[in-house]
Every structure is written in structure tokens, then in C-alpha cells.
Image 1: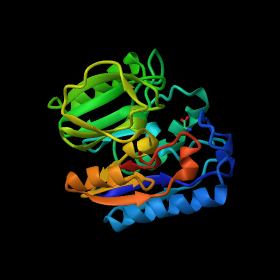
Image 2: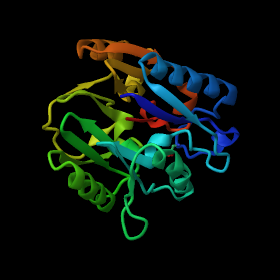
Image 3: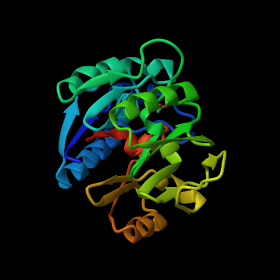
Image 4: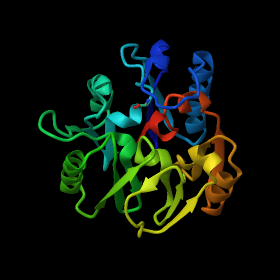
Length: 255
Ligand code: GLY
């Protein structure tokens, strides 16, 4: 990956959607954590563009949810959360100035958020949960396969976590790290999942980029799993985003 878009944390962050009962975020700390995240990406040779904060959209720092980038094309999503839909149009100009942009669809059924889209080698897993439904997943599948017919797209119904990647990410094509708080509603037949201890489950949201695995917190197991996968572990503290039901992968769009 050579480029990343991140979006500054708005003053309104505490008004975002969350079911966590971890208290309100400390805005100043969230901003420091966000800056450290962007610096970590920069240290991996990624050119990081920081977009302006959007005060009217408290969750807008979770920019991953508004687009899926694959094969040099960005597909703008349709968030399930009505209060997040305006974030999509807000991201359009920044994406359109960098790559071709397509829409998942502006009307009709279906919703999908980027946090449910997990690439692992030539496989793409689309989580079906509260933020992505089969119709939205089907639209993504159709758009991606028209540009890249070699991709295998699989749907993964789950519950227990906001997005699929909140609780399951890929360390390699057939190696995954999981949060036991995520329940897969079917057998997992696509490789090995290494499950974290429940109290370290948030560290399952690993961002694998340029030979490194960035994870949230000080989980020893996550460090071991990331290292065993041949990746350089980079622990970050994203406690304030966790309070808002947001993960580390949600904070950037990468290509
Ligand atoms: N706070 C992240 C989300 O609910 O979308």
C-alpha cells in the first residue's frame, strides 16, 4: 500500500453511535491517538492524506466504512446507519481526484459498510450482520467481479460485533485472528483462525499493511500471532475509538 486517507476527529465525536459502555471519549486523547495512527502508517512508507473533520458526522473518522478500494477503483458504499450516509458524499471528491469512483447503488435495496469487507489473498469475505445485508453484499460482489473475475467472494453471517473486521481479520491468505466475542453463524472452512483471549478480543482488529500488523492495545497474544505470521507487530492505543465502537482498520482507506 502506498496511500492512505484518514479523516480528522470532529469535536462532535462523542455524539457518534456506540453500544459500548466505556464512557465518553476524551477528545484531546483521541486526537493524539489518531495522529499516532497516521504517523505509524507514514513510518511504513505510506503517504497519508488527512482530510478535514466533518462536524455534522460524529463517526466520520471511521472513514473505511464509506468506500471499498480494490484494483485501483473505489466503490462508494451505502451505510446501514442513516446518520452516517452523508459521509459517503463527503468522501467522494477526495477519492474521485485520486482514482475512478463507482457507487454501490444510490437507490434500491441493500446496505454495506467497509468494516464488513475483509480481503484475504484472492478471497473476499463480506460479513453479513447489522451493517451489511445480503443485497448490499450482492451489489458489491457484482461490481468487484466485473473488474476482477478472479476474486472469490464469500458471505459470512455473524453476530456479536459491529462489523466483521471488528472481530476477525486476516494475517495472511489462510490465517486469521479472531475475537471470541464474534460468533460466526456457520463453519469456517477457509484456513486457521487463531482466537484471542476474550479480554484481549479488541486486538483481533489487525491492520496488515506493508509487512506490519497494527493492533489496538497491549495484547501479548496478538503480538505473538502477528509475529508468527511473519509481520512486524505495531501496538497502538486506540482506547478512545474503542469507546465509540470503532476499530483500527476503520480509521483509514488504503491503496
Ligand atoms: N461508531 C461507529 C459506528 O457505529 O458506525
